[in-house]
Length: 172
Image (cartoon, helix red, strand yellow):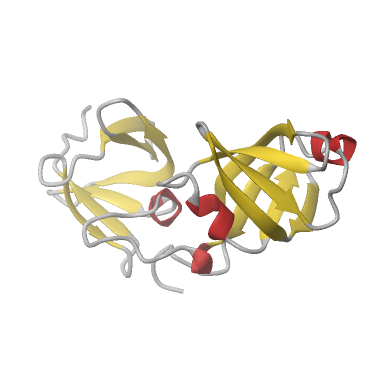
């Protein structure tokens, strides 16, 4: 498949941080914007290490900086506590299309990075979030950290060609 936006890929959209109350509700940290969007993605796949299970969301709402959710089959505080630390994942196809000029991190990982002189710098292996801007972790002959600042360092992103063109000296 061209690009790296396969709709069958799992995307981490949150993490279960513990139980809420005594009736089996879980508290989750949401990586979505706004956080309450996490409740609308259904079903969830909960993953921790090699353990994976489907979780059907029955209801949920925002609660402070997190969301609280009632999951089918989770009826006690003990059952909810057992889910602490699980990542909440959904299929890439469940996410709305990004706005023009915006990208999901999962779509950037695996893209080839070349500079304006067509020198291959490597492949995006991760995208780090910093206070100012995201940073591409590019692995090639060595690891490079490239600021993901469109129009300055990032000149183009082409998901269909699996390629990012950057204004970057290969010596750095």
